[in-house]
Length: 232
Ligand code: ADP
Ligand code: MG
Image 1 (spheres, rainbow, N blue to C red):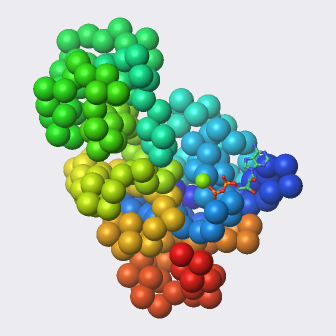
Image 2: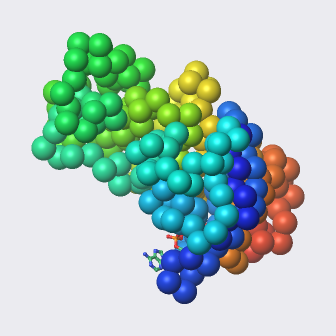
């Protein structure tokens, strides 16, 4: 379980509070207006942003004192953050070792990850020679290879067309299911939430609300969500 306990985050004039629990293995869509603090929330969980007060716990253990690299967290951004001068296999390998000094076992794991994400035979290509969908697969393979229980995605696949995006969401769901990951995914698209999530965390007016069942909340949205959906 992920617990945000009386969390207060401040960035300049902006303040966000969160007091909520996410069960292990859950798939959570984080939705809310632009600028409401969705990325800030993920940044605090990942350890890039230090909260003003409160605690973040994973499996009952406080992770707030840990550096980002020490947290049980893997994060994937919309931009994919692929290095243009590295091959697909090397970009994926960065999930294992930043210096890319990989042993045979690690190279084998990269090969497996490429197979699992449909990138077989493309290991030597550079990002510029891959399609947008293939680039997303590289980023996804790298994130999963880190083998961290908590997967945070900030508007992933937003640059892809609807069919490719559905395909990637379904691949994400499959692999997360196989690995037992807990997934928090920021999205501005309620269809993503419908497709992927069993829970929705609404971020609005300075607060990240406790997760509500996705089916329920999307069928019969509370006022804050209705307002947001109305803006779409
Ligand atoms: P979202 O991801 O929901 O669009 P963000 O978490 O990126 O929103 O931003 C939330 C608020 O925090 C915004 O008002 C933004 O202007 C502000 N903000 C983000 N980063 C910083 C920063 N480094 N310093 C000050 N304010 C920031
Ligand atoms: Mg954001």
